Amino acid sequence: MEKDSKIYVAGHRGLVGSAIWENLQKKGYTQLVGRTHEQLDLLDGAAVRSFFDEERPDYVILAAAYVGGIMANSIYRADFIYRNLQIQQNVIGESFRHQVKKLLFLGSTCIYPRDAEQPMKEDALLASPLEYTNEPYAIAKIAGLKMCESFNLQYGTNYIAVMPTNLYGPHDNFDLERSHVLPAMIRKIHLGKCLNEGNWSGVEYDLNLRPVEGIDGTSSHENILKILDKYGITSQQVELWGTGTPLREFLWSEEMADASVYVMEHVDFKDVRGVHPEVRNCHINIGTGKEITIRQLAEMIVETVGYKGNLTFNADKPDGTLRKLTDVTKLHDLGWRHKIEIDEGVRRMYDWYLKGEK
Image 1 (cartoon, helix red, strand yellow):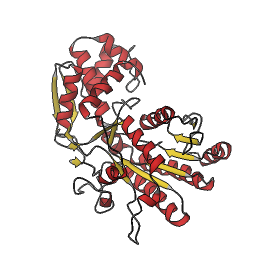
Image 2 (cartoon, rainbow, N blue to C red):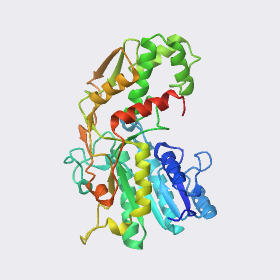
Image 3 (spheres, rainbow, N blue to C red):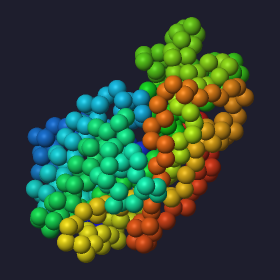
Image 4 (cartoon, rainbow, N blue to C red):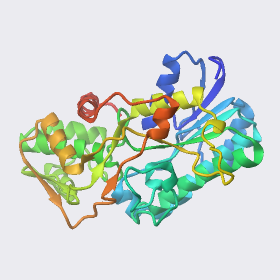
């Protein structure tokens, strides 16, 4: 990419998109294009076509997606498959029609089978059934990956798909119902600390910034306690879903951004298509190759936050996949490695959260 190339970052306000935007700026790219959801609804095919007609980007980074944690994936199954398929169809389709030079599609390691051999190599894709809880989302992401691969094979495009592990970082989603596991735990344990210490100003500030089901800091203490109790947060304990035994891998979002820009700058489809006549699984895992149990992570957050109450796990709630660790051999061979470990990342995450940003 040239420094004055026009680069469209879809989802530039999100967890990864905002980090990619900042990374590109730091590296001297001057023509970045982004639109908020209010400015451009990526579900609207006509609007997306008009946007591409007007802007004509040289490069596209598709970081926009409809995402959430176990609870949200279990409840909003239709939304997760329909919205993500539609976003991908519109953005990738218009990228092809407008002959962009290169596209980067961000997927998820939830594409891999529930019982995939660990650590998960790219070749594990479609080898056996998916995890049920996030199956619709995974199918949508697999479709996006295959769309990129198929356009490359049929039309000679240069669309690269990357599959990040669990991400966390600035501008994450801290919604108690819809967020991923790490930001949800940070918020729950922070609110538990505030209640445990009788710090109502802290609770009210938090809820004014991020209301929960219409309850904000101006609501009565009774209503606040009731809604927080629904999510397992009381003055005496914080309850988390599952047994705490599943193993997970986490990557700081700004490192995901750095890996994404690295791939855009240094990796082409020819570098990942392989030599087998049946070309498949050309995507790239992005992760650390290191894992931690959910219980260990929760205890790390408890220590970081300074919470003195009880931490419990509700084994009646689903754990999700028991182990998900990426094999990052391909990524390392292409020349990129992570630097920020989980303990440093949790400290950074909580410091950012305390600043009261959204």
